[in-house]
Image (tube, rainbow, N blue to C red; front, side, top):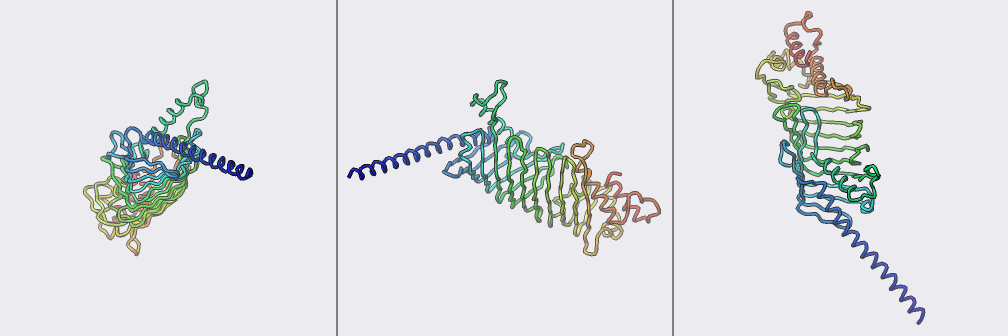
Length: 378
């Protein structure tokens, strides 16, 4: 009997410990849940909101998320999402880290802008919101601050993977045209791996697929955002040429009547040195000039002597190109290099060199060469 009572006491003691651990776990999760709601609100900032934030044992679920856009942005919101699911690392909440194992964004709309100086801006204000959250965290934890005021353990934000599912993206290019030229992507799916804020020093993987202009865009590879080192494979397949007009016609007063674009490019950057070989194919490509100019002059030449002369037996214009330059060189422009390489490719496809214009070439060849000479800026 004594042994039974002793065993019963031990059992009750063990059950009590388990109960205390369970209660402590619930309290800890509730505390962490309250904390993560607060941090999500900080990250979204004053222009962002989420209609509902549910904190579960393993997942944080957000409904109807909105991230407002700053003044001058071409759209009202920079991001809208039906739902966002976050899998946090709860242990990190007790340290100076915000570690998210995964973030899944579904049913979303996003806008991005390339500014007139060529800078790509995605989710404007988000990085600043994270920086402000880090400053607030350090202010609330003075024990983590050195005598000179610098944080001894600055808040780190690590995201192992962000996945975007079945969304839309509008890309506004202020550098290529004014008002900004808009490129619409739908059926947009993307995965970004290993992001660290604010340093952005890790190698992040990219895997993107989307529908664009009746065709398909795919991007995959990796990039180090702080150094810009990268290896990325880019592919366009069956894109309506009209959706890429300013990138093909360089602002010339002409319109693309028909045609499709296929392109492959291997983008490589090492120590700011760019090397990007690729191939551009234009199929059933026809343009209509609106006025004089390099493209207008090219289009005004009889088809047999100009556009048709560029095509192969399958009715395609195939151009091999290679972008190259130092991204730190203020005189180097990716856009200008692109136009020159494509213009040179057109000249080669036509069998005419710019240097050879006027040196005994026939009238049609001279006209093609002069048009291409104007196009590539020589």
